[in-house]
Image (tube, rainbow over all chains, first blue to last red; front, side):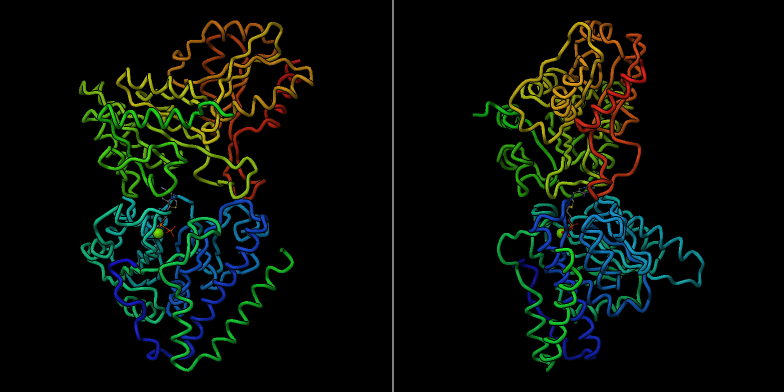
Length: 300
Length: 314
Ligand SMILES: Cc1ncc(C[n+]2csc(CCOP(=O)(O)OP(=O)(O)O)c2C)c(N)n1
Ligand SMILES: [Mg+2]
């Protein structure tokens, strides 16, 4: 395990309303079971392009959506974005079709797994050059908010690798200078493809964001911790939240090099059991599984 | 059994450079991600194999800095599309340093292309995939080569080591497997002369058999050097070939058509007073769906284009 991670859970689960907790869990399950279906399709050789799965990292988007969806935020994510799309309510048929390179896909077959978008949920596509979503998202926010009384919320998601891009750092500085209403999220899986952070840098992105004058926080991907931080930081934008997470499959494709550092799914289920939501959780999980199998049934 | 491949050659000169020349090799995700398709030696930072951070623009500048200090860096850019970020300090500083301050700044840019060619999981879509040597083509000061065969790789490396320019080595992953040389074809009574570049040379080899069956006779001039053109040292052969070709010539490139392909066709046309056409990636955004990808001209597309030229010139 990465040395900076002391605890895997926050102990905050009992502080959250049951409805929100279960809503988070439902989104989590939707992503997990959607991705399992993608894996089946990929392994059956009916997907002829790289896929970037969110398996292992679902807690981030599912928690953010529960507390931030009410702001109807603009969303700028990166190549690994099935989770954000699903959590914020993107159309599932269109996501499936995009991954199956169909003209009925959310990007009409142009985007593939890496460049999904959905105007309906204000999610903008990514161009495949890592980190570009940060300056572009900042520019979008600046323009949306140039009138003093306007507050148009944005979420900009990057990875621990794209956080190193020169133009990401420059854009963070500008967002801080202009006090833009943006929540920056780093999905920190400690990996750039397979290269670990310690090979690439000796600094922390939250320290950089802080030195630019942003409010910052850092957490593991315990959903209750993410929800608490997202809620608090939203009162103090721009803000930066770095979330340690564990990718459980390869950078692209469906293989794995053994078990992930931790499986958040198991940890959450234990917590749900502890707070007396075991039965509800099981029902939600079964429903999700069925829903996603149904969604893919005719395609597989 | 396979002979020595281009991959072996790249690995060999890189290893020798680090071990014996005080050389240095820099790039992103070199060691953990398959040693760049096993084209780089499994060495350490102490040996001169340097992992950069993910800052693409700064990475290009850092490579230029190591060149300035005389280490003759090999700078690996894992997909040519990333050159949009890596190129600025190479073309604006390294390429000008000798002219402006009399200080050479030689670096060997290994810029890598790939394409799906119908293989599973290989569609590259909008950004990364193809040759992007056109970005450098329009700027002075950086010779560009597109080697495919083992001997060509060696020749480009030897040129680099005996000159003091930054060199853009426009690679294609398909070339790494190649363990043979590709001879030019110049025959009397040809219909057309083909000038293929990079991976399209392999597609031309495929196309030739079918073209022969169609009764279309092609000359093929393989272009290793995109710039300066004279390094190909083939002026006489080209003159003879184009003079022999009833319907002129065709430049075939793995980059977008509005760059090297058209630029080269223009030069050939004026130099040799022959009609020379261009074929490259289409002028449109590439998508991920197989039918929306935008790949280097396949053997089929090459044949179609040649048939078109032959017909329209009749
Ligand atoms: C400008 C640019 N440079 C390099 C790459 C190659 N590349 C693609 S994904 C990736 C790693 C991304 O890691 P991270 O941002 O942490 O996201 P993750 O895949 O871990 O979710 C790299 C280096 C790229 N796509 N764009
Ligand atoms: Mg990462």
